Image: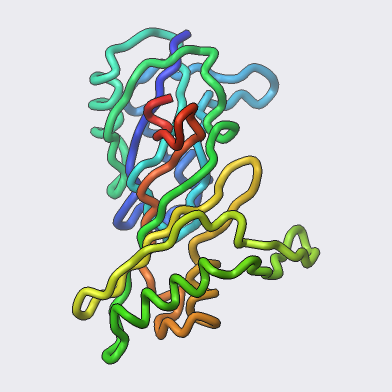
Length: 231
């Protein structure tokens, strides 16, 4: 059995498909591509896919990852080519490499994600206003919100999981970049940060009006953050 790490993007119409839909698409595409995917044992065997982190519906992913076990060793370039030929519109395989079958689970090592949010900028809102709003949020010691978890209301402090905020106003476009906590230790959602900026920071753009892309996924290395591709 051989394990592969697959780097891919999910954009365009694909960003409106759910995580479960995506798993089904990859299952169907590997079958059509004739890839010898390994299956789990038991009464309900399923393909041995492992994804880094689900993408919320509507958010694109430019640096996504999946680990996949094949029963036969194939050239990584051939795996990429076969998948790209059979995946639905909006999905693109960017790279494939062989990894150790003892490699740690992607979700277990995932720690941070970068996002880029872009929207039309209302007339009158400028760079100075945006930078002031971002700086004001980063200066807060805590940002408490209420989340609904399995029918129960739970207080969550977002602030420890907001590592960086930056952005700019470029004519009719406003851009906000975020580096946020993600993974087994917690999760800060980009739409939550945008909502705080909208409600308390004075940014005149509703969170739903932003187009959001997840641009990178990271793990903690010995000297700082490293891409999941480098693990």
